[in-house]
Image (cartoon, rainbow over all chains, first blue to last red; front, side, top):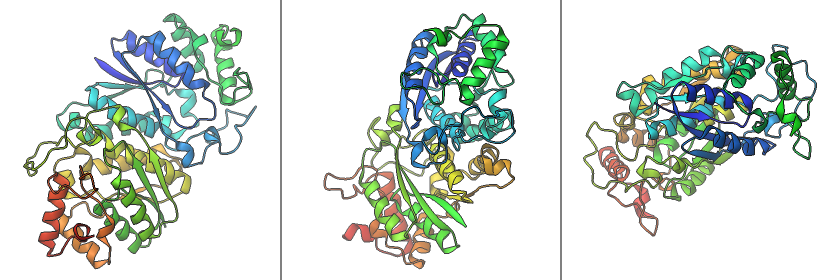
Length: 223
Length: 223
């Protein structure tokens, strides 16, 4: 079984990929450089791809900053110390990002005749981002079945999102159980000049809470 | 009403855009440079965007050649004088291309709060390409409604494909009725060194048949 994994360099996609690998998928990794303000993420993706021993790792440039509309691609400041449990869609939401990423993965999956696309979306993401909800992923799967040669031939493509209903603490425990080295990963939306995580953006706060709840120490803070 | 139109530089997307404009849409145009072997198409897209008087024209680079799998991005030769009425999927099919293009347009449409994406797919395309069939476009529309902020707020996004059931001759007649200048457009999959159309690829053959059936002369052959 072959799968294309969307690898961001964060701990969610690393864990999702490792779960897929443990379930028997041979992995190819796709990292989309979409004009995010920080590139540390991409360097982490390379380290994670090596740790996962993927067959091929493609880094693809897509300048989503051309469209604007998100603080993650330089349109406005990344919020700090925000009340992240609110139900609103945060400014770090990149319009249609998962749809664009899944579509690119779909193109490669079709060439490779892969049976799945692996994505690390999870319960925390889908509380705020519309394109992380289970009903969205199912709709993408149905669309993909009609979009491709494999679909025409009756072979579907699975969107494998093993962390979908998991909290950050659960994800970290799953990864710890698989022996993952989270010091390779990078989650911060606005790193300090020396590349260390800021500790104040949504992503840093959720990561710190996750490690605390899991009763573990974040190795990325001590390297 | 605002719409993002996917503009390739060919006559189908030009005509689809003009139909949308005639129906009252204000247009922004997106051209995806996806590693196609010939760039004449992109120059034509610029001319067409000017002729349509679009508000903004974004050209976005996405190197789909990184995935391989299509003669249109340099993977094998573009077929010449092929029996194009056969039911098979041709080698010029680019895996998941329309899904990728529509997804990128969706990202921009969300930022612009546009109500539609305009695409020039038509009956001839969907006889061979899976991602040109009406059921595919409907599935994309359903997925998009779940993917976006607008969708969450109950506002859908229409995939406007006014040429879907039209033959090439019908498209050309529609365009002629709207006064379009098809000398601006470019359809050839493998142009000659001096940029003139080859006359032998699927796209040239279908275009020539279309003009002949419409009883019109192709102005692009006489410039």
